[in-house]
Length: 235
Image 1 (cartoon, rainbow, N blue to C red):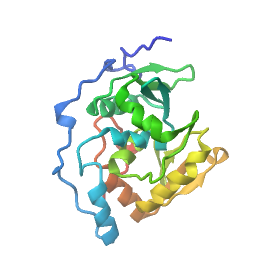
Image 2: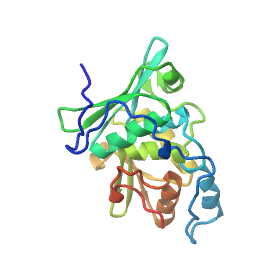
Image 3: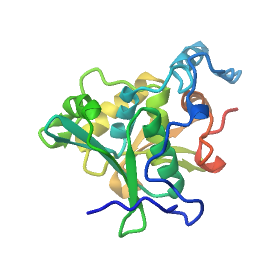
Image 4: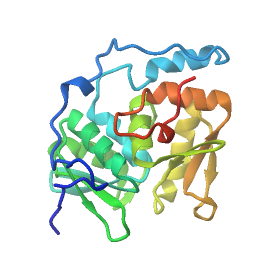
């Protein structure tokens, strides 16, 4: 099946098949980080150093896509990442984030009105596949952890604001991943409630002023394509 990524899925400005890595999107290691809210304790301040703005983009950040609903498949010595998202702005953000890491991607509309984003098969993605695949199933590797850059990509693919908190969506068929991913959230101070498919999930629901402030600090400022209401706001 050919991929058609020449028009904007929202019907607006055209979305190229391949995004160049825009120079103004590359965050230098010393880029500014806003101070944490006054009510966040010292551990939260320390976590800021793991935020999305604390280091340059790397291929390892794409593990955040696999923590959520992303999939990886292998072919010979190469691998490909893919994810289906529910909004056009997510396509823009994810294709740009992939391009920042030297990974070409395309997108196409799905029959149910969503958008499938796929990378090319690349040797550089094979380590992710080796780490995450158990046969054909997906499972986080031993020692898997989250940081701001991984959370940012996860949120761009499957984050959703609620009146009382924020949802981080999971893969519907990835039940073996849910527990380890929840443990990784706990480790960065983002303990969440696991929602099953019948409860609006699968997803982790993050609530509480301190945890939401921490999430906002870790993922950094919203990408230009993201609606303000779709991204956690810094206090």
